[in-house]
Image (cartoon, rainbow, N blue to C red; front, side, top):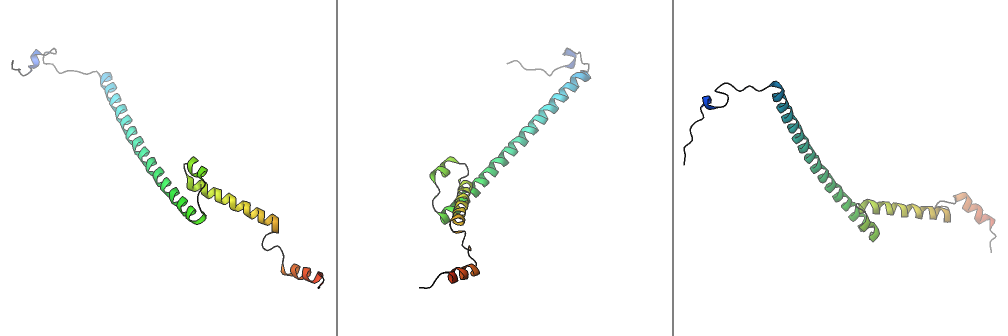
Amino acid sequence: PRERRAADPRESRFWGFPVFHAAAAEGARVEAMARRLERSKAERENAKACKARVAQARRDQLRDYHVLVRLVNRYGACPGEIYCTTTEPGAAYEKFLATRASCLVRWWRRLAGGPYRFSRSDVLARSESQPEA
């Protein structure tokens, strides 16, 4: 193989003179480098934020699962439609139970006027007005 000689500056196309770069070309190179640096920094921040969002979603999902388990243990099985069609079945089941409870309360108030419909004086007045047999 041919052996390589060290490059002699006199043999270069610039005859040994220092190479001059125009300020505009240097400025454009520096600006391009700065843009690349900003872009890579933004990509790193975006990746970090994405990881944080995924971690937060996992924590929310686990918290919702614990809510669902607590409610199922207390109030019975969750309807299949709620469990299969929502991303947060615990919150949906909680809302479902709250709606059912408020319907039951409204029904009781309409039917009997609530558990404290009659005061003591009303009860006494009703018993006095009824003839004894």
